[in-house]
Image (tube, rainbow, N blue to C red; front, side):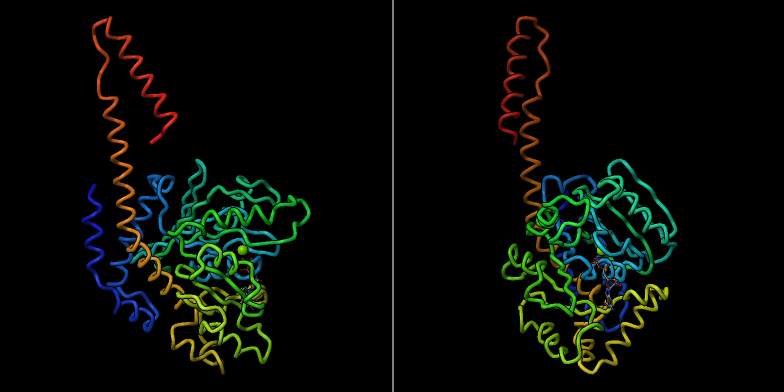
Length: 376
Ligand code: GDP
Ligand code: MG
């Protein structure tokens, strides 16, 4: 295995300056891209060969109450319309792999169970995800913990892998089991409890942040907030007079989080009804913050806008991957050793002498039993 050397190369690179460049230029610096992409691809290739069944890989999980704006944030980051509506829309974990292309046409690939489909029209995403959810979780309002993977390669996205999870609810709707709230929480916990997961908590600005279930769940698994980043949505819907309180939240004066807060303005229902494209929505978002009496300073501080969120998330994910690599290498090495040891036990071929066959078979049988009872 050549991992340790690969890791050393990445560790010796210094992206500090390029991250800040990318924020001020509002676009991805090519040096920045070159140093980020191999790391994210390395983790994805490990995921592809199924290592994540044995070892937890770094990822970003998006959690929030229903209608807090999770899909809108993911849409803004990916530039692709995802299924949305009222009630429970995300019913299976959806892994959204965004891959930045230097040039070339947009392409998407959706995979789940033994289904794998590549397509070239972004407008197909919504229906393909709905179809996948219906197949995995049934054509109703139930949920399922099987993963749908959606890879999008485009010149307009940043390199990120995010996992969208069903929104937190308390009251079951018609057709949902009584324990749907717990089922959803358990599914969310499966991802957020892992120390390799960055938790992206989505909270609307117009609710009392201290009482949001999503933030409480994140605090339960990450009490010091080392891997929790909060996104505040719907800043255009806050009551007049509440702006200062929102500023206090963004500055971490209400609930401190070491990764902090970023505020974004996504498309509201009327923007969607008016068919405002995502590119125009980003322009509107920038104007909204630039002209805002209270929030314009946040834009300069790198605490507002979807663009700033994308840059920050990539930086967080890359830092997180770098920190996890030595531990991942160690875990892979331990697994490899134990498999090699086991393999050694099977090295001997059957004897040619008839009288030795009996003892040989009982040895093999004993080994099998040992590995069934004490799997390595
Ligand atoms: P999810 O259930 O958490 O995925 O929430 P959605 O992304 O579907 O958003 C719920 C509703 O809030 C939708 O009607 C969105 O258009 C709206 N919404 C999301 N973000 C914003 C925002 O920043 N401003 C406004 N005005 N509406 C938003
Ligand atoms: Mg949603």
